[in-house]
Length: 137
Image (cartoon, rainbow, N blue to C red):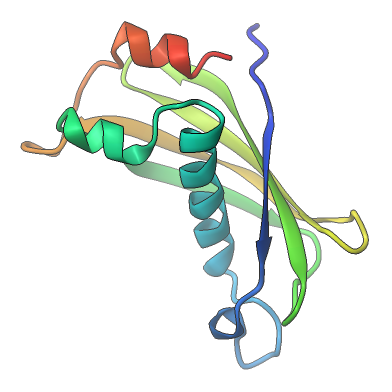
């Protein structure tokens, strides 16, 4: 089994993330994972999302699983940790953990399955060997 690097991004809860119950709405946690991945793709892997677009490629999320542990609220800061768990012929599984910065306690964790697609057709395309190599750190 391959072991891939874990990367971290620090983010803050925004006022528009808060729902009627005065905590972060459940859908925002995927936004945090996406923001962290965009940051990490550029900063850690050296291949940002814009580089994929220039190649006519994009990532489609075909499934997501989130296990909620405790809420985040207004003013909270968090660490979003992600890593690639496995590759498929045309994609990968990205695992994530979000921790509240002030307590170090896990807020949620889960995984997202992504498929690489050709933007012109929206169809899955095999993961290029150089991309797999760059993201296999």
